[in-house]
Amino acid sequence: MAETFNVWLDALRERRERWVAASHENNFDRGIWNATVEKYADPTHFELLQNAEDADASWGSLRADQRCGHFPS
Image (cartoon, rainbow, N blue to C red; front, side, top):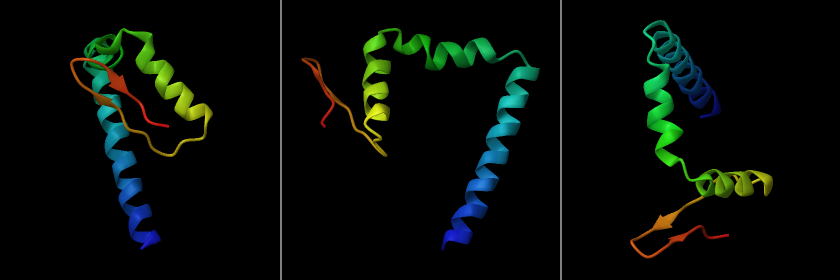
């Protein structure tokens, strides 16, 4: 099982590296930035993720509705 996962993970890593290289080559960097970072311009999103990382979280969830967002501990 672990070997199969490692093969899959290595293949995924290679595909993502090719995607990043092609994005750089075709000057898509700005679009990627807009789709990820500027989409969440409110620093609260990043603060929640940073707090989870600081707590050594291996996963997290965020529930949001029209009234509020909830990041369970």
